[in-house]
Amino acid sequence: MVLIKRVLPVKTKGEGGIDYLIQSLENDYAWYPWKYIIKRSYMLSYNFMFPVGTKYEDVYLIPRILHKVERIKTVEKECYNYILGRPGAITNGINIKCEIDKINVAAANISFFEKNENNKSNECKKMLQNNFSHLYFSALIPLYAVKNDERKELYNVLKRNKKIARYTSTGPQKILKILLFILGIKGTAFLLYIRMVLKNGFKFV
Image (cartoon, rainbow, N blue to C red; front, top):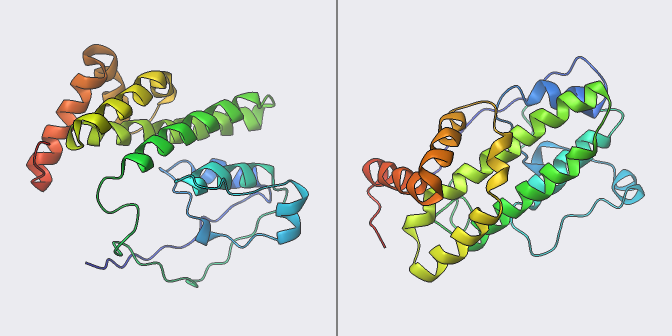
């Protein structure tokens, strides 16, 4: 099934990347790299590279680029066609590596942006960390929908990075954060799994 969605860029009042991020992150922002045209010279000057062999590499790199950039302009025009639900996309089905990389990328970026100190950057930092923390809860969902050996591997990564959830401050994830610290990882994950079964008809593995 191919979905069509009309997406226009966020209008920014400021020129810098931090201003753009603050306005964009008022919603649950997505880090698709196809939304940007970035100068090659700029990428090379700061040694910005997508991590090799890592899923969610766009989530890892794009916020770092935007946070650093001094000037950003938006084009209020549809100029890119993106197919949602294409065969082979990482959003189709459950891939244990994707889930683990997702958590590790979220943890790496939360730590990276912890270093920001000035007021405007500090506001942006909190919004970024909240955005990244939401990835943790999405990785809870498939815990009971994968095989036992994969479940153990994913659980260990979730347990090791549980502190990510503390950065959540907006969205329905706030409720999940409360459940997580009451029911634990497995209890919260099982509730999310039951919801997924009822909604999509998945079967317990």
